Length: 344
Ligand SMILES: NC(=O)c1ccc[n+]([C@@H]2O[C@H](COP(=O)([O-])OP(=O)(O)OC[C@H]3O[C@@H](n4cnc5c(N)ncnc54)[C@H](OP(=O)(O)O)[C@@H]3O)[C@@H](O)[C@H]2O)c1
Image (cartoon, rainbow, N blue to C red; front, side, top):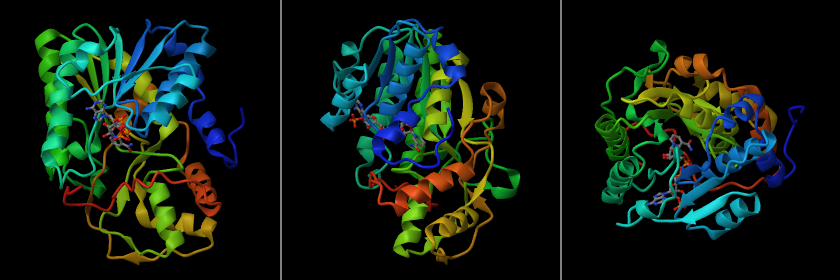
């Protein structure tokens, strides 16, 4: 299938985001049914669940995919059910929440709370620490692929090429520290009951409706100056991230395996904005200047094991520019990639 030049509609975009690659189709055959995805109602979960479902269909493998979340937006539940994914509406902070989850040998964990931390830090800590402990204890025998975040690292020297998995974790801000606690609780339970876990420290996932590239494009289009202090970033096309997360189940171990997840390159905010500006026929405005540090990760290790994410940055830039120029929908959930003090 040829890579599209652009996406005329959200359904075309969703179709592309949920199209399984050969490696995923091959891997999905190895999973016993069901595959449970927790926190599936957010920005990534719906397309991850349908990607898994379509991979199983392509492999002619009878894998039930069960998406569990609170589903505050009931349309997401309907969207998933229409595409053959079973849904389970559950608040995992409630006392009986994890007991209502189906048994499974493979679990993808996507539950998280980031934005609004400054206003409601207690909720951030509860979601990012109580829920992981309960889920890991609920699935002592299962392999768990738990999505963590690059925010667990402090800002890194740009010239070093990004934090590596063995670096110490002493980030700024309550969200980032709660994310460190999330990892430590998975590790604690994994060591205690020998549960195989892989912690995937995701840097920015991007697609057309949200993400760093969409944020930059919208700032350029609105003539809003782009802050340069956090002048470098990592990211990965969401479809590639989702496929790597599912395949990452194979890397689960006790004590947990830990990998950075993003494209292998570092990207300059200034360069990416200038490329977007060319497509948008508008020169970006900037404020400030690049610092020597940024929130950056080195994903060479995971790319060596699972292969480099197939979607190149220039393609993503072209897609996003076209989407924004033609008035495509935004989720209105800015990434705040410019934040350097950990206050979300
Ligand atoms: N997207 C990125 O670029 C990125 C980057 C780094 C790390 N991550 C992490 O990767 C994970 C998935 O990303 P995402 O962008 O899809 O996150 P997201 O949009 O914040 O989705 C997380 C989902 O977790 C569910 N959740 C929260 N509290 C819950 C509870 N008590 N019980 C059940 N479900 C609950 C929510 O589902 P409902 O809406 O159904 O309640 C929410 O939509 C998150 O942990 C995120 O922090 C994402």
